[in-house]
Amino acid sequence: MNVVEVRVHGLILEQKTQQNIVILREIEGERILPIWIGPSEAQAIRRFLAEESFPRPLTHDLIQLVIEGFKGRVTRVVIADLRESTFFASVMIEREGDALSIDARPSDSIAIALRARAPIFVNETLLQPSPEAAAEEETPEAAPRELNEEEKAEQLRRFLEKLNPEDFGKFQL
Image (tube, rainbow, N blue to C red; front, side, top):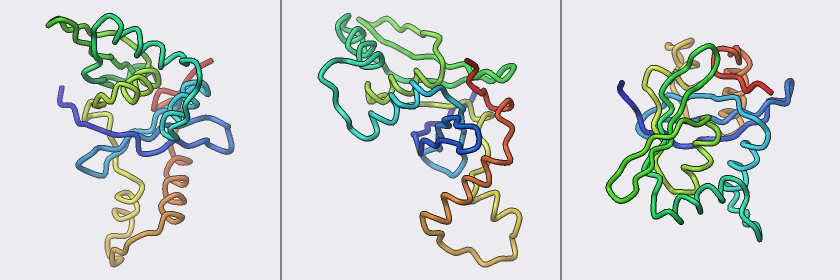
């Protein structure tokens, strides 16, 4: 399996369905991976990205504190597979020379990786062209120009509207 390092590129609340989508984007490229996630995981990711602190640890903070308390460290997260509309991820932990792989939902894995400042990797086969790349493919004769943030957001919105959530691991309650 070839994996590609990604970063959290954005977090979107899809207006029609009120579903949260985390957008992962490859670090050295334009491909993305949208993952529909639950509201509590979206809030955990959003709070971390906004650098909000709380007087008491929240769930993902607590997990990171427990790992550190046992003298372990999160070395990376890998989103490895998509089966029957469900993504599969692993949190990789090292402790005293031993490596441990823990099965977890991608949304929880991402929230933990952010707190641990650990890299996030995605199976290359799960990535897809970014909205900008898809738009360029549709109109190759148009001269490329730099898009402003509003145009990029609109392109991403249109791109996501065309996607079928069941094809990308829609979070089921």
